[in-house]
Every structure is written in C-alpha cells, then in structure tokens.
Length: 374
Ligand code: OSB
Ligand code: MG
Image (cartoon, rainbow, N blue to C red):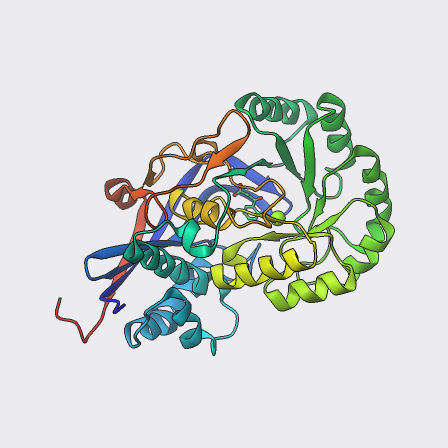
C-alpha cells in the first residue's frame, strides 16, 4: 500500500448543547480529520484533540505539528502494506498518542477497504450491535438534570453517565438514583478529586453505581489503588491509562476494576487491542469511551467496540445526540433495546459528506508523496 496523499482538516462543529465537565464547558468540538488516498481508495480517521490541553496534554496545534512534521512523512516515505506496519515506523516518537491514532485510524480504514471487509471484521470484532449509554454534562440544578436524563431514557438509553466535581456530586447522584431506581448509572470526575475526599466516595456506595470513572489524578495509578481498596464500587480508569503497560500496572496494583478504552488516548487501535486482550485474559471488563466524535470517529469507535471484551455499555451515542448536522452518512441511530448496529460495509462503513465537511473545515493542508506522479 503506497500512500499517494494525506490531507488534514482542522474542523469545528457546534455541539447541540454545551457540555460541562469538571474540566470546563465546551460548545464546539474542534478535531482534525485525516484523509489518506492510495490507488483510488480513500481512508478516513479522526484525531480527537481539543483546542486546549485540559483533558489531554495534546492540542489541535501540537497534533498538527506532529502529524505534518513526523507522522505523515513516515507514511509517505515508507511502504505501509498493512495499517500495522505504521506502528513500526513511528514507535520512536514518544507521546502524542492522539496525533498517532488519527492517522492510524485512516490507515486501518484504507486497509479494510482494500480487503473489501468491514473495519470491525479486520480488527477482530464479533458483536453485531453494541450496548451504548449516554454521557451527561453537569447541569445548573437537579431539576434540569432530571429532565435531561428523562429525555435520554425516553430515547432508549439504558445507561447514564453523569459528570461530577466536588460540590456537584452527592446531591445530584442521590436525586438521579431516586428518580430512576433501575437505570445503569455511573459517574465521571475527570480527575477532580483527591484522596482526602474519600468520605464523598464512601457515601457514593449507597447509590448502586456501576462504576466511578477517573476520580483522582489524570496520570495517577497509585492513589487510585489506595482508593479502590476502600471501596466496593468499581473504579474505572480513563485518563490514567495511556498504554497496555499502564493497564497492566493499574490491574496489578488493584487501582481499578475496569478500563475505559479510547483509541485516541492510547495511540490507536493497535494499542487498544493490546489493552483489550490483556484485560480479557485478566477478566477485567472494558468499555469504549468517547470524545464527542463526528460520524467518522464514531464509526471507528463502534468497529473497535465490537471486540468481545467490550462488555460494559459504551460512551457511543446516536449521531443526533451530538450535532445538528454530521459529516458522515448514514447517521448512527439508537435501536429500541439501547444498542447501535455495527456497520457491515467495507472500512468504517459510512460515507463522508464532503460538502458538509467543507462547511465545518477551518483550515486544511495536503501532503503529497513525491515519488508518485499525481
Ligand atoms: O472523560 O469520557 C470523558 C468527552 C470529551 C472528553 C472526555 C470525556 C468525554 C465524554 C463524552 O464523556 C463521551 C461521548 O463521546 O459521548
Ligand atoms: Mg472520562
């Protein structure tokens, strides 16, 4: 597979409703859409960086730099016959996992298309539909939160994840559990707490939470092991797990009982599969997280989430939960049983709406293979 051309687009898409977490409020998602062309086929990937280094140390600008100066040249100057070959050429580059994952995703899509099979199949997926949930931002008061959640339950979601931070936790958790006694319910702190808040977590044990996601430091594994020892409710790590090595450290130290896998955070599908396989062998259920992707990234997430150890409901909601108009078709719809179908067409299985992509593109650039006559 000789890559003829790589195109990067900085996109900006308005969220249907602002999304508030302990890290701040977001009204727009700015990501980088990666397009690779080879012998008449096109692969697409989404690099899930954000404009600010709040969730991850990477930003749109750092990813653009690493992609254009290091990752894309590695792809244009080498023969990449499988998406897997890419890793060998870029493993010398430290960090910058979201940048790496965005280009890797486009190469996997291309690989699957060149074989005429779905990305799910190429990655080793076995599930035809995946159980999903919805991630709900913090609201100004309990009543607005209950109203918002009740709308999602009416839509068919069977699992609710609520963002929390100190001062916006127990009161909200208690109200949600009272109103919806049977719903699968979990919380995500995005690292807003410290071990000194342990009493708050002890009180959370009364509300039958499926899990508590990333309560402590964003790079911490040790303090989480101390907290998990004191709690029955499973801790799930998101930010702290950047690689299969991190997953092993966390599992062996007892820092968590399950793991949120996001390909962007860990450097791509190859590393995600390594974490998945390790967790499957250790009986640690994993679930697929989300970064408010467009239909391009969402399609890739769904393909990955079809692997067998993705047991807990995913942060992969229907397209219309996020954007008024998406950049890929068909839209992902929620089935009545709270699932989303895994695409079966070749590659990511959705078509990119180039006109709409142009509308949301802030800036684009392309990189041609000097050895190919285009
Ligand atoms: O912590 O899981 C998170 C979105 C952006 C950054 C971090 C997170 C999230 C979400 C949204 O929770 C999940 C989704 O895409 O639905
Ligand atoms: Mg999270």
